[in-house]
Length: 264
Image (cartoon, rainbow, N blue to C red):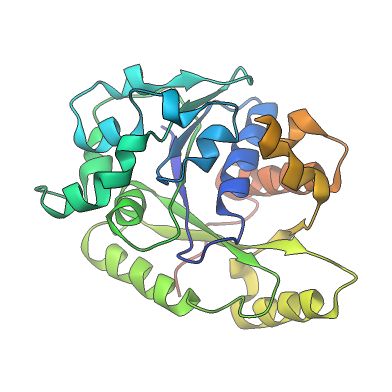
């Protein structure tokens, strides 16, 4: 049975999409079969894998609101074991439509349960908000990764997100667990970055991943070429960071070398 992981934070620019793409890609290098669902209307996870979302006729909108078989929505990528359900332009109106749809918070969970997908992981890239698209992802998921940028106001809004996770856990998805807080865009030469890392680790302890994702030019360049970092430059510090994160995730979820963190 696939482990379903939402990458969520209502703040923009913290590395959600970068994490979704590159974690998914790195897991395939560990011979895991992975599906990436682009649930962000901006479609950056789709274009970051070399797919033009403006030319796609079906994708995550149909997954949420349509009747199409989810298996027919999967698109292959340049990595053999990585498929994607892309965002399309239709997803822009999904928030409004979901507001008037029965079972609006459980649509994604219901649709994913229709098929037994032969996958190890499903990664959901959430939009930078706590609207119905993100709520659907959290209700459908077993685990959550929260990227946190190593900059000023890093923890801004985090309490609101954790409260939302608690509410969903109490009402719609009791099995939801926080897999970890992921520190991103870390610059070891920057005093503030080091202070943020120290502050987050002090405040949240073992809820924080050991892996820290560095600020890296090659990591920033890769999406413009439609490639994950391991295809663009596997020797870069960014690639090494996400390879380490994939291994840490496997150790926690599969090997019993740790355990998914509770929300408290």
